Length: 176
Ligand code: ZN
Image (cartoon, rainbow, N blue to C red; front, side, top):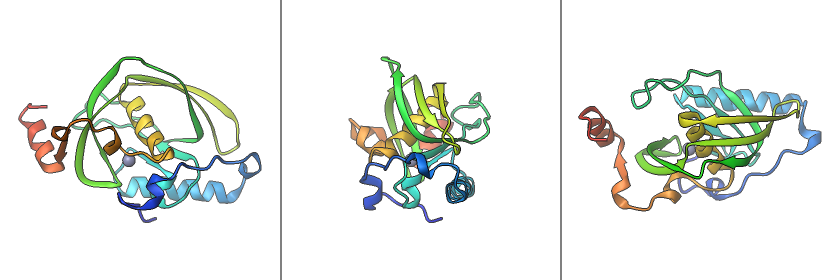
């Protein structure tokens, strides 16, 4: 599926909650598979439905080790439908993020270090999970997409935006 780029109206719209009668349907299953495949093809570690022009409140998170987080957990992609934040760390952690919908840029964003969420699966079962560190950051980044935000909305200083290549170079030089 095509990935919406910043400036598209869908990225500014709050997502719509999935209703009880929409669970356990082939359409929901098929869409979730297409969403996952779009994320994998784009080499992403998370994606939210509005990023593929679909207004429903669902997302995947899929942490894996990377250059910035060599110790990040390798996890099976997790689908979260109708996610809600029920608790979060009061202390914020600053870290650089990128986004499939904001090509070419990285931004330094402060986010809670852990978060507790309620969500549903494809069957509509209600589940509870706590995410920490890098996984919490992915969750919060994707959750932003469900409320019409991107990392750009958290920028407090223009110096906290870098071109991808400049960021990668600075990281290599140990400057970040
Ligand atoms: Zn994003």
